[in-house]
Length: 287
Length: 206
Image (cartoon, rainbow over all chains, first blue to last red; front, side, top):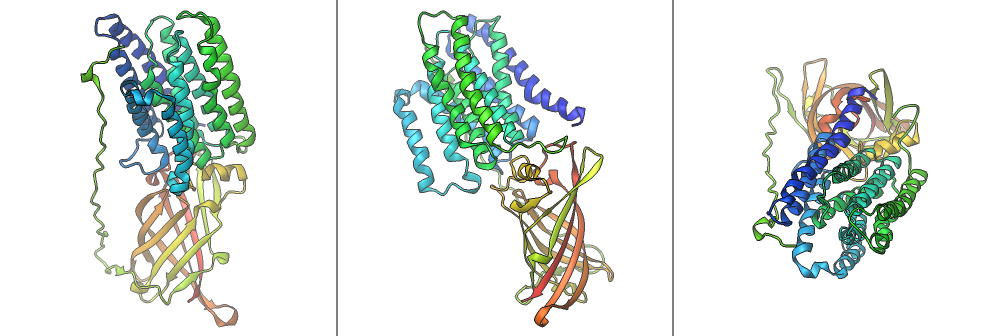
């Protein structure tokens, strides 16, 4: 692969999301220290995430058309919708119950029986299902008193999703999941020196919507095994007990390590499953 | 946690701007292009003797070749009367074949053709022009959800009879497109943007 191509992928898919996310933590950290109240970092945080994702996708694989011409162009829209639903989740008590997630899961099962899920819509059902599971778990994990737990969980799930998608023949989707992983890594690195929590309910609404959509499209249009996507989507739920176990403080390293290990074990298994049972895009000595 | 109501993010409505596309053909000063005729008594493409091959440069070093194994549709061919010509061709994108299954699967994925979203590519002629020796066809090529007007030279390769006296006709066309024009801009560099397409069809009189 030519160096300029590799450079472009690294710049827009990894370095830029990392740097902008890290810079956002520093900027929002100052605001959080001021008297503006805690709401502003939440809103600015999710806006930062959505902007990082949309711009990175545009620069990496091209800007979406309006209306979207192909399924992959719905991912930025998924980020926006996920963020909006995340905000609604904060303000409308009805959505705070587990029944909301149950309703989305039921809808995801019923939807293909009402509307034929083929062609461009083939990914919707799997994506909805994955999002309901992933988001309902992550929206609980953001309440963990250890501030590194949500970002580490999200980052590892995104990284494993990227490996699973790229390893099963969807390189483009893998790169898009990688944007979320590198943004999470940037937030995590910046959080080491600044005490701002950027991963809020709306932010996980947006990020999990992107990841679930990517996994759903990998299953529908690529060769990512459904089981692999399910295992990755469930990994946050499996790690949830560890996120709230025992006495904690905001930098509880043991808890972060425990949650990270559980997520890595589970989501990593999903990624390995995808590499083994999906179809690799590698052929010859080059792509 | 308190939230300022003024900070509530309202739902953004994305308004699709409907573009009006001019469909005027670029008319030359010479012979007037014809309007495509009906293909009721034309030729049905014989999928077993019709081929669509393509080549694209790999790593800017050598050409990689591939083909689509299923091509169907119909056409009219009349070398003396360009206005009687017409093409309506459908290519099954799921049959892309480069000889390596993993590569074919990758080409079928969202990285390239996304065949589950866009299972076919089509070409419909809109006009023909002949300067006496060269027949040129202009038409709409739809691939990967994008329609572009292309112009290609048509070489009428022959007319004849098949088994049982069926009337046959054939043509070949070679032209170059840019895959980025059709939204397939992934892996630019490792794979060239320009794709040379050679289509050779044999048709059986209806």
